Image (cartoon, rainbow, N blue to C red):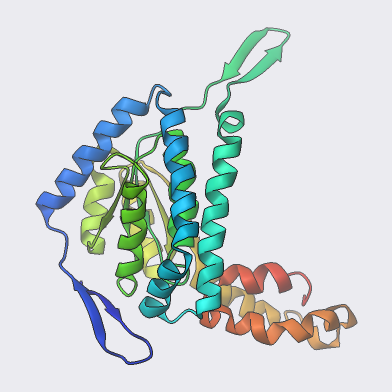
Length: 287
C-alpha cells in the first residue's frame, strides 16, 4: 500500500513512506501495551495532562508550518488548515481543563445500597482515520484517550502520510512516552491482524464503507469494542432524502430559504467530504 504525499497543485510526489514491517508492528504493540499496564490503575494523569498542555503550545507555535503540511498533502485551503490546527489546540485546552471532572468516580445511591462508577483506561486502541481533516481526525480520538490512559496505534489515509507523521512527532516532542501514539503505514490486512491481537482492546474508524466493513468485521470476530463513522454512506443517504421522499420538494419549503445561501459553500466544504457540514446544517431543515 503506497503512502505518498502528492502535491495536489503540481501532482509531484514529494514524499514516499516505506510500509510498516511486521516487526515494527510488534514493537508498536509491545510499547503501547506496556504503557497501558503502567497507566490502567489511573496513575500518571498529571503527567499526561502536562503532555497535552505542551502539545497545545506546540500546535499554536507551529500553526502555519503544520497547516502547510496538510495543504501539501491533500489540498486544503491554507486558511482552513490553520483553523484546523487552532481547533486541535483548543481540544488540548478542553480535555486538560475537564480531565479530573470527567474521570472522577461517580457515586450511585439507592435504597438497597450505595456504589460508584469507576472510570479506567480500556487498553490499546487501533485508530483508522481519513484524509479530509488530517490533524483533527487524529486529535479528536487521541487526546481524550491519552488523557484517560489508552495508548493508540494509527493508520491514517495513504494520501496524507506527512500530516499524520507530523502529528505523531509533535506528541513525542510534547513529552509523551514512546508508544503513546504510533503512526503506522500499514495495509487493511495488517489492521485486521492488529485488531485481532489480544493486547488491543478496541478500534475506531472514520472513513469509507470499505474500511468500515473491514474494521467492523474484525472487531466483531474478536469481540472488540468499536466505533464507526462512515462519511460516504451518510452523505449518500442524505442526498437521496434531500431530493424528497414521498413527493416532498425541499425547495418549496419556505423555512429553508435562509439556508440556501450557505448550501453552495457547505456542499463544497472539504470537496464534499465533510459529512457533518451538510448533514448537521441542513438535515431536518430541507426535509
